[in-house]
Length: 101
Image (cartoon, rainbow, N blue to C red; front, side):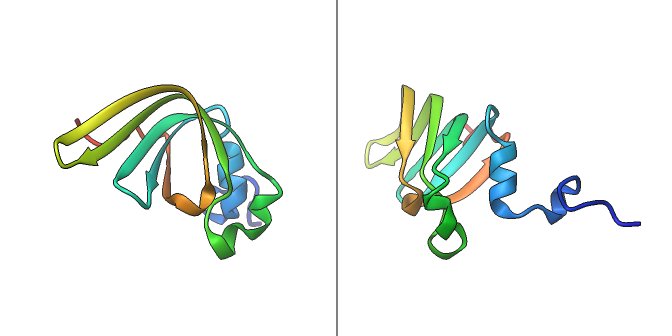
């Protein structure tokens, strides 16, 4: 008998996987030259209704490190908390620790 979808990570819907990441570290690649690592506090359920059509929903992270590529080189910024607009997110990496330093 096949396992229910909620217990098999390969069969989770995208929002179910993001929901399981709440409270965990997550690496986010943005459309710009930024990558962000932080602890996922939550995401906007209303916006998530269009998750598959327009990208990821808005997300709130704490204990954040922002990595940005600038003409002068890599800039690293520490932030207590951040709200990310889902339209600017390209990829999520659960448990990711960010780009190699």
